[in-house]
Image 1 (cartoon, chains in turn green, yellow):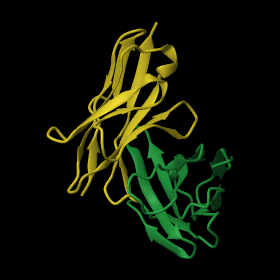
Image 2 (cartoon, one colour):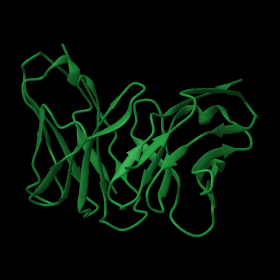
Image 3 (spheres, helix red, strand yellow):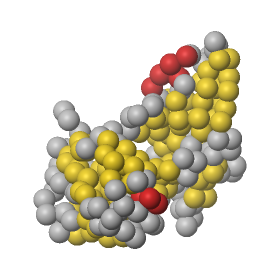
Length: 114
Length: 112
């Protein structure tokens, strides 16, 4: 059971470049999330989706875009990369809006913008 | 609004000693509480969670946590630390079941 799969694992971008972080889950989960993790800051929610075709902003959405064309996939797009976007990115998912859902995480994508 | 405070960004214990990682939360409704562990260069893995029922929750690898409503706390403990417990630990709270709020993490070092 693959769970939540993210690619790439590591990437170096130049300032102003664009890229897409891929995320797919095979658990038929409705809710998917993108978080960024910065040292000493915990996890901050970038965007989330409650189902195919529906996305919404989280706490730190500026500089990012998402789409959810299928239940399985939730890519995160970085347009015009900036050094402030150097971070570790985690995709996550839960089954649905039921109390006590466990949130499942991918293994992370380490992004450096230089 | 919900929030999570983890006291102590770094905790060091000797191998075999008690592990105590502190977590306090704020929530306007009965919360669902979680502890996650993150090993270097990996994602977060669930250690344990509290939803309803018994307030003492047992998780994997010998960890447990107790939900204390009066103290708004959900501290993580393990009676005897092992070298393999060295990792980053995150406390999280959820009220609606689909939004999660994470603490800033506690890095646990185990000294041989």
